Image (cartoon, rainbow, N blue to C red; front, side, top):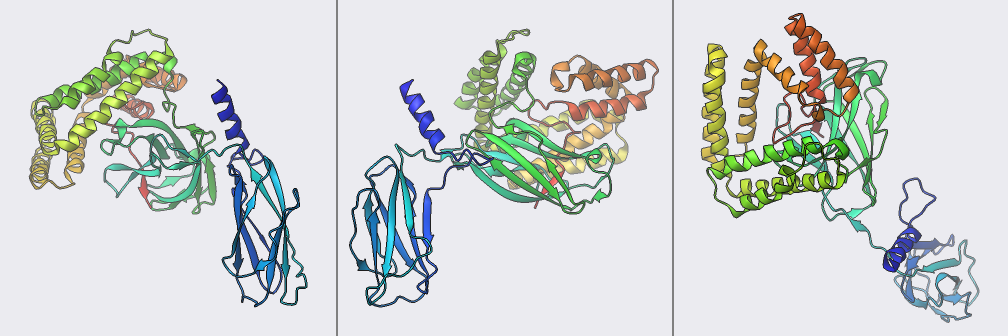
Amino acid sequence: MTAVAEGASLFAESIDWSSTSRARKNTRGQISSGSELSLTFNYISRTPSVKSKIAVLIKGQEAPGTEFQIDSVDTGWTSGRLQLKNGATIEVSLTKQGDNHFKVFVFDSSGEPISLEQDKIVITRTAATVDAIPASHSIGIEVLEKLGGRPSLDYLVRFGDSLPQKGKKIFKAAESLKAGAASSINIKLWEGEITDPITDNRPIGVLKISGSDFDDGVIPAGADLECEYEILDSGNISLEISVPSIGGVFHSGKNFYSRQEGQLNFSEASLLVKEEGKNTMDRIDEISEVVDSPKLNQARRKLESAASLEQDNEDTESAQEAMENVLEARRLLAQVKKENLKEIRQLHLDGIKAFFDQHIREHARQSEESAFDNLAKTAQRSIDRNDNDFEHHLDELKGKNFEILWRQDWFVVERFKSMLEAPHLFADKQRFEELTQIGLQSLKSDDIEKLRAIVGQLSMMQIATGADSDMFDVANILRG
């Protein structure tokens, strides 16, 4: 307890509490003279050491015969006169905790003092230093590399990077957004290092720029989205998006926190965690058909806590621990995929082809059958060549399946019914209730087109589960 208290006090002392971002106090200092010599004295202004160095920087011409001297105001110690030259250094003693005061003197070649605008140096001797805290996880924004491409993560901070950290990135709008429109531009944050699929990482949150957020104009496709971000050593993340094309600035309205589960409320999340665990276990079982790896058994063991959660369990700690294990199982799966890429790609292609043959082909138009079959052949060549286009082709095949299914009234009805049975997958309970009531009325009156619209809106609200993000919830910003 004493160690924790001391550490907290050291950390608190290192923070500039007068700043809104709680940045660390500056450890570097300097004083400059306004004389013709153009002098600067550089030093470390905060150190736990009992010694510190002061260095001379001469930006103009050195003047032969000039000298300098540094005295301790606190103790009376003096360095004596020393030759003034660029790069000269002197070590001073810090005799007490807290502020140590020094005075600088400069003399010309005749020994006369040269007036300095600044001649006082204060060096603070601290009890200890708190090094920059390393980021415990990578944090990135979901982007598209190109229109129609697969989403990837553009990292704001990488695992191990020093915190706090701030910066600016330029993204592009992938689609236009008109003032007053119901759609939005989504800046989605993820935590983790899994490159594919990125939905296996932990969702942090989303900053949405909706059409209702501005009164006039259009954000055209390709417009710059200037993202300024700050990640504090506490884990808080703040975003500000400037859109020059409409002169708008949009704030996150809150601090995202990288160690929270995005939209998840663990006091009522046991069902969702169990579902995430089951989806991940299904993927392990599928991959086990073609890959024999001890990491798959490790992943299975990680999922045991999720499988054992009681449906009405309100123990927040148990749900959090189970979700951590699900994420760890997914990290192991990502390693297995990387080590057995060709076999797993073939498994996925064979699976989607079989699904099309068994469930979709009978509903497809002839042109759609030909397009699917040709794309499947292209995906197979991608596997054989071991190129990077396979996942994009696989997404296109999934899209073709969904497009055909979405035309079928029975599919829309079944999808709506499955949503009714899974309210735990929706963070906005009030909006979920409103939309499902409209959907039930549409179903009762056999208004399938209206029901289709309701299902589309619900899909955009749904928390993504499993390996694949929902077809409705796609990234719509491009890497700058």
